[in-house]
Image (cartoon, rainbow, N blue to C red; front, side, top):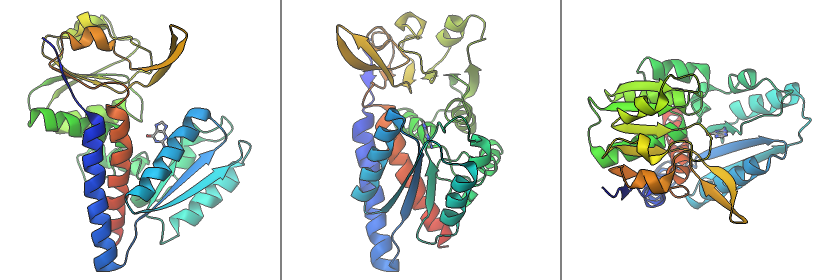
Length: 287
Ligand code: GUN
């Protein structure tokens, strides 16, 4: 079988166009422009790239973008004071603090200081609890993007066997909650999982989110399964820097029914979902 390529880039462009339409309508009918504040502490190069890209796309869909770049040695008190200011700013509907934070800052404390209604990452403990109990919440952008692609490809996911490889708070755990919400039978696999190849071979849906280049070989993939590759890993090959996923794309594409490429799969969907979440936060705050 040769897998169908799930084009996250094209799907994300469609989502962003829909968001842009809604933003234009909000402006015209209600005089409201959604605003997203992104906070970056320090100079992590990958984070800088993501933040720049988020800011650019925010403006492209007609929203206001507020970027706050803080020095790597910013104190926790100063960061919390900025978040408090953004929480109370009516022009800011979404707040994103780019992770990872420098080591001296308590990530949990910082995330939980964001107003849950403005927590467009869906990382606040209130949103995690709401998602886990099937209530209306802010849903983390990367797993939401993965779910949208899976629903688009399959229609219903009900009864499918899904394996999520990776148990991070950002992707693995919320991804498993979302798949469970769509009535999949869900396994969360991780570094201590016994016989990972066997676990993956049983899955109709494989979501790989471990951050290890090409760690899932094609012969782990069940014939016809759908593979969602969340990994974005920079490697050196043949003297060139290359982006690869957590799945060995070439061999997996020979067995999968459908697969997301890296780049051009999950990555663009993450930012599109961030914009969709910001629009949702804005609409909820305005009744
Ligand atoms: N770092 C890597 N992914 C993310 C994300 O989705 N949100 C935030 N805030 N930081 C990240």
